[in-house]
Image 1: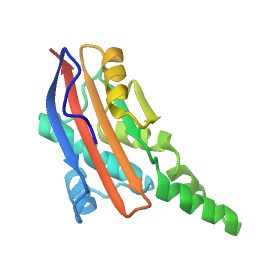
Image 2 (image 1 turned 135 degrees about the vertical axis):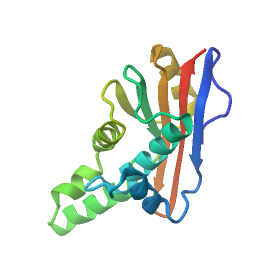
Image 3 (image 1 turned 135 degrees about the horizontal axis):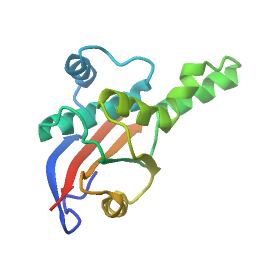
Image 4 (image 1 turned 180 degrees about the vertical axis):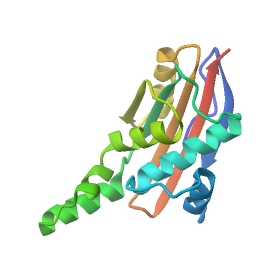
Length: 167
């Protein structure tokens, strides 16, 4: 999911991969957070699981102020998007269903649960290596939290994250 080769001048504080996500990943996330995340949808919850796992592996309680957050996906919030489209087709589009299909909601949930605010962006890409190199050029001394989150119709859930710093 993420090429193990890092851009020159960067080192990994931590890596976290769930490919595929383990069967009890949602329970593990709820236990780690002390509560089950509400109203964010499966894809955003999976992103939070991976990001929190990566920061835990790095020994960081929160993402450092000044760090950049970049999230990539080839599929986006596919399950939520299909569910929202089915609701719209049936004439009963629900606000939370629609919101869960929006990547911005995932970024907001990450900021809230990681105790962080700052430069965050989502990218729909095929080449995550190219995006990682670009993100490293944009990041400053506090580094970067970079993740890939894939929801393939809810059947295959995958997430991989890197916590990178210059050096």
